[in-house]
Amino acid sequence: MFKRFFNRLLKRQPFPEKDFDVVCPACKQASSHLSLLNSNYICPDCGAYIRIPARDRIRMLADADSFSEFDADLTSKDFLQFPGYQEKLDKARESTGEASAVVTGVMRMGGMECAVFAMDSRFVMASMGSAVGEKITRLFEYALKMHLPVLGITCSGGARMQEGIVSLMQMAKCSGAVRRHSDAGLLYLVLLTDPTTGGMTASIAMEGDITLAEPKTLVGFAGRRVIEQTTGAELPQDFQTSEFLLTHGFVDMVLPREKQKETITLILKQHGKETV
Amino acid sequence: MTAYEKLKMVRALDRPKGSDFVEGLFTDRVALCGDRRYADDPAIVGGIGYLGDQVVTYIAIDKGRDMAECMQKHFGCPMPEGYRKALRLMKQAEKFKRPVICLVDTLGAYPGAEGEERGQGQAIAENLVEMIGLKTPVISVVIGEGGSGGALALAVADRVYMLENAVYSVITPDGCASIIWKDASRVHDAAECLHITAQDMVDFGVAEDIIPENFEDFPQMCENMKTRLLQDLQGLKKLSVSHLLDERYNRFRKIGIYEENGKVKQ
Ligand SMILES: [Zn+2]
Image (cartoon, rainbow over all chains, first blue to last red; front, side, top):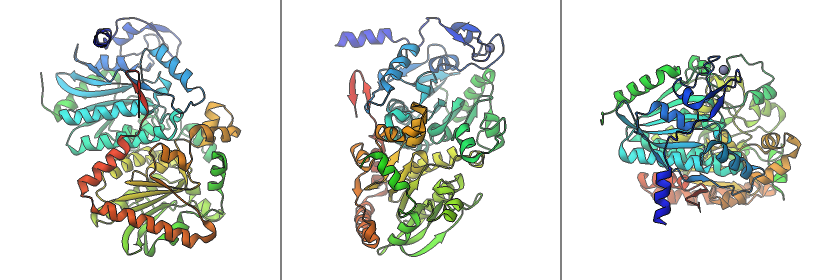
């Protein structure tokens, strides 16, 4: 029993060195993930922003060897026997090596300690079910106890319909944890990444003290197709992009990847005491 | 009755709507309008009234009773200004230390370009954060359709009740069917899979109890509801604010089914 636990600890390196190919969705050119890590996941061939896996996000922002992960063994359960859900989970676990759609833990940025969650769009569209809700809630509760700021890197298809109403309740549960953290005078910083939609936009993605967004990122509540079908409206090209949200007053800045580390570190410094 | 039959039933035009329940439950009402930021959303009605001898703030999503009303209220799909008006009334209730009663009946928040421009997601998110910490008792009753985030934005409460045939769902069964089977006509299958009935809500700890329907004698049904709500408020009013908020936090905190270290937790 103890040995198994120890083995798991040894096995659990937060950033495995194994390389794999990532295909650019724009030009279909394959690049190695290790090379993309050094180029902000910007395609070397066409300059497109490639979606960043959660673990790589944290790796790119965190000071070397400063990240320790929480709740890595927490994973989803197909408790409704919902059609196709178990297969979706198996496939997501297999293809990403992750146990859930969110990676949580603590890290340092420029010496500043913070709690962090990053969502992974490769895992069932990073939709929010019980596993995601529980991990994020625990993270905020931990950050409250330790007086740490939280950096949340969002992307999500919304609530996870395969877990029914229990998924919807995760929005309220996480919001409760955000509220308690906030009431203690602690900072919650959000970085919106592509795509952040539905129940995620209607909860923790829009509950930050400061909200940053990547360029040309889809952020919205209702889907474009649903809106077009319901209202027959012709929607502008930039509808529900981060630039659209900036114009309408719902984000503080649109922040290119090259500047994220510097800006986030500065904001953390403005709100806290240095620990290293 | 199947989940789909219930869904059809709560969507029927002749079922009592938000305004009917407001008239049946609350006396000597003063209706209040507007979010003080942009507009008044007729899909959400609210104000101050008496529940028995108790002054309360009431907030109800109203689908409308005839076609003209339905159009005006965009079929009970609230705009961001509707959620902001609800929040304004809740904060007012907190200030004057009166309880809040929310009545929920919506397909979901309005999916439109204007709603997105004015921050539909942000408006709902703000209600979740504000309601979980609102320093006065809140009771929500799903009287018909509880449609996803648009319903939850009025249902972060100390007690949640379901009317006998009411449904509550993370996504409309219609939308769910078109996603899984690319076939909106399989809405009855989706309704089953999603587990949307009042009994499901009690089983998942999402609702405390089920309120029997009796639309043949609607005044009597409202009297029974009134007794139930007043009883609850008496209990909730006895709690200190910090105790009330702890219980509300824990009410939602404990919901979730997942696996950890190979064990199922719920
Ligand atoms: Zn490319």
